Length: 383
Ligand SMILES: Nc1nc2c(ncn2[C@@H]2O[C@H](COP(=O)(O)OP(=O)(O)OP(=O)(O)O)[C@@H](O)[C@H]2O)c(=O)[nH]1
Ligand SMILES: [Mg+2]
Image (cartoon, rainbow, N blue to C red; front, side, top):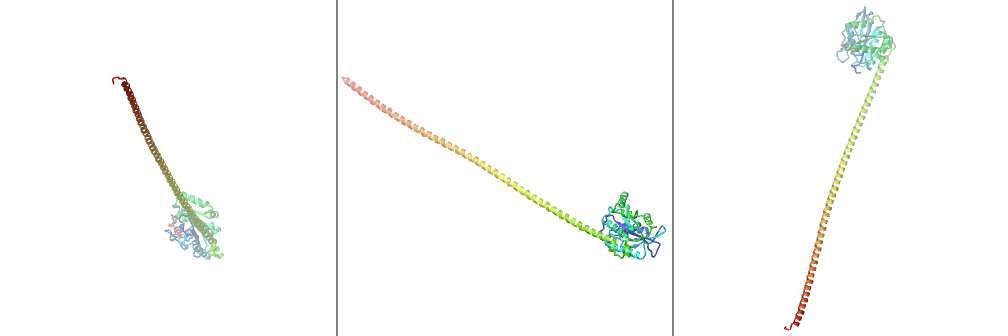
């Protein structure tokens, strides 16, 4: 079981009477979670020299009795116990160690005068492990002994006073914390890590009746094993609950991991699809661009062809016009030539006609002259 350093933890301190050797001394058991200051408290008030934890590891491993000390005219002994939530041992082991000790003292007719349960007020929370420890402590004591229980809050110097007061109020009034045991007669007291406050706490037990813890009854009178006791059962139930909770958390983790994986894969798929879609859109855009470019090129080429055709037609038209003009010119020239020729022919004909007329005239003249000559000759007597 791992140690929850930041959880609000609790510690049991047994105060009990060592009966055989000193019938007048009162014995108190100091209990609680590891590191809550049980040994420190006992050393301070009894002058003992138990090992005190200096690091993260649990310190007390066995149940140990303090040296006797006197308060209010009574001889007292404090029983130091290993703390629950130990760094190396299971809570079942620790419960067995404490139970064995308590059972032996009970068999030897040694009775406790009270139990101190230590709780660090500096712990910010009283989480599952702390509550489980306290639940087990309750089962270990039994309801009938709660009037002989003092819950001691310590480490007040570690936090601001108002924070401590607020926590103390919560501890005393919350049903899942200390309220039920306070309602049944337990007390809650502050320990300021001074001899004075430690003695004030122990003094509370001076006139108390001796008590038999439930677990002592169960083991010694009823012959139960540690596991069969209410505390053992509570521990087991809590362990099972913790296991179930661990499994539930694991499953939840797994479910979260699967969900995260599913979301990641869905996201990957979505991203992949988006990439494919983007690539498709890009490809389509590119194809459209190419089609447009092609169409533009086609249009340009068609336009070019049109222009060329128009040009060709224009050239042809011009050529034809030129040819037509040339043909017309040739025709005109031919007609002109024909006309000139005809004119020449006509002129020749006219000239020939004129010549003929002239000849005729000349012939006529000659004939006339001949006639005149003859007439003259005829008329001429001389001739
Ligand atoms: N500030 C402060 N420190 C304390 C107080 N009581 C104990 N400590 C310190 O808390 C640490 C643990 O003290 P321990 O007395 O060894 O605690 P424990 O409950 O006996 O521990 P386990 O034997 O492991 O169960 C040590 O470093 C102590 O010096 C206190 O009242 N105030
Ligand atoms: Mg100790």
